[in-house]
Every structure is written in structure tokens, then in C-alpha cells.
Image (cartoon, rainbow, N blue to C red; front, top):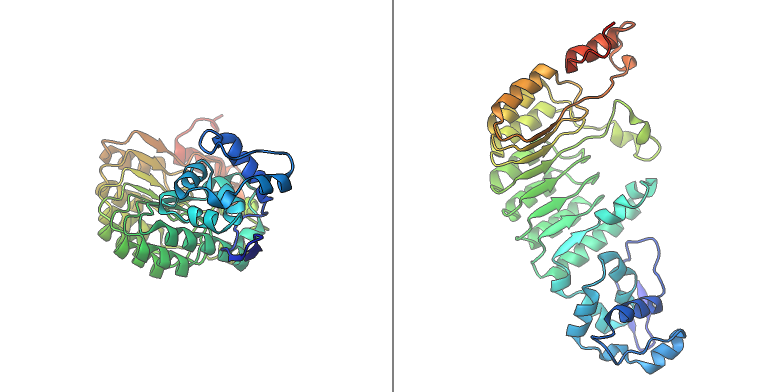
Length: 348
């Protein structure tokens, strides 16, 4: 992307967000919050007059860093980065780029089919690579979605101090990238690989062996018992490609992640045997989320809980299982529900 600033043509990375606001409005907003730092700036209603009265390019680098540190990443990308070359260089300062968190952007938006497109993945990759390059190896947190294998490998090789990695719904990330993460990021403490269907138990084993400080693992799956919330948004071929080696993943977690304290397995189809392997190997667990795990009985959960002396919170798979899913006879689904979760709600 090339923007004519009035003095020169400057190359900028792809903007990942939907729109680029007029940068004059950002100048005003920044100045309004920082007039004590930069008293020479004169805020006028007329942006042309503002430009003529203030030489924005002459602000010191330190002053710019102070100003820009008050803005979230999205605002920096949509405004100040486009003002001029000095502002662009300030936005690339490593002190502003030790964390990349796009979750507020995703959480404040309605999921769209556009998120699952190659074009959107390229935009996310552009953000990730730009922040990694600007961090000078100091990046400690990455929270993105829909990134590619290639971009994640790029980040892993350049971020040895990475402690938090969240790549939910990254449909292209595979074991190859996760192996690189395990090898290059031994300080990893938190990992979220929810809804990543190309990642297998081999990745979890590799992470567990090479990242001894891992305390948080989130490996959640989509609700395939009621996929209506995903249909029409998530590609059908991706929904149908959900991993099937749930107990193998459970075994990898139990064998290689002894220091885990927080584990999320929403809508995993692991069995009681898989849960037992986790409870025998992850004795430090304090938080366990089993919401939607339809293959677990109340006895499985009780047996596993008895091993976990530090467990403070456990979310059980307490949900209604439609009769059509299990093809049970009339009222059979009531008995199935009652057997799994030991409830008297359906007793007459």
C-alpha cells in the first residue's frame, strides 16, 4: 500500500482492518489527550490550517512513542501509521510491539465468511509479520486468528521470548508450524489451539516436551452436536475435517504437560479413558473445562476429579443431548441424559 503524504511516497504494510480513518481526526484526538506533552500543537477545526500551523514531522521520536503508546494497535494501524515516515518509524518501535492482541477486534465483530477466506488470512499474516519484525525479538504475546503456517513459522523463529500464543481458528496451521514453535519458543506458558483442525496429538506432544513452563492449554472444538451456529460461515469441508484422535491428544497432554494448571477441552470427544490419562499426568490442574464432552459419564468425571487434589473449578458437560443425535428410542434420550449426569429432572 502506498500513501502520498505530501512530501514523499511512503510504503506501508497492508492494513488489516475494515477501513482507514482520515488521519487528521487521529492527529486531533491524539493532541487532545497529550497537549501537555506537545504544547506546540495547535488544534483547529480546519485540518488544512492544522497542517500549516504545526510541523508534525518534527516531533521527537520519544514524544511520538509517548503519544502512540496510548492508542490500541488497531488505532495505530488505521491512523498514525499513515501520517508520515517519522510516524511510521515510531509505530515500528519495539517498545510498542512486544504484544500483539487482535482478540478485541474479533470479539467485537460478528463472525463472517470473510474471516475464512485466503484474502483475510493474508491480512492477518501481514499484521503478524510486521509486528514480529518491529519487536526486535521482544514479542511475548501473540493473540491472532486465521494465520497461516508460513506466518507462524516466521514468528516462532524470531520470537524466542514468546510466552503466550493464541491462534484460534487458524485453518491452515499444521503440525509443521507447531513443531517450529515448540523448538523455538521454550518459554511458552499459554497456548490456545482451539478450532485448529490441522493440528494433531503430535503437536501437543512436541509442545509438552519442549515447553516445560506451559501452564495453560486451550484445545476447544466446535459444537458439532448443533452446528447451526457455524453453518454458512465456516466452510463445510472444514467442519467435516474435525480431528478424530481425541484420546491420542489426551494421552499427549497427560504424558508431556505435568505442570498444566488450566485446561479447556470444550466439545472434545475424548472418552473416560482419555480423561483418566489427563488426570493421572496433570496433577496440578486447578481449572478443567469439559463443557460439551458428550462421551463422558458422571462416573468418568468423578474418578478423574479424585486424582486432582488442586482442582478448584470443573465445568461438566451439562447439556441436553438431542434424541436424533444418538438415535435412541422414544424417551431413551431422557434415560441417557439421566445416566450421564445423574439428574432426577426426568424422573416421574
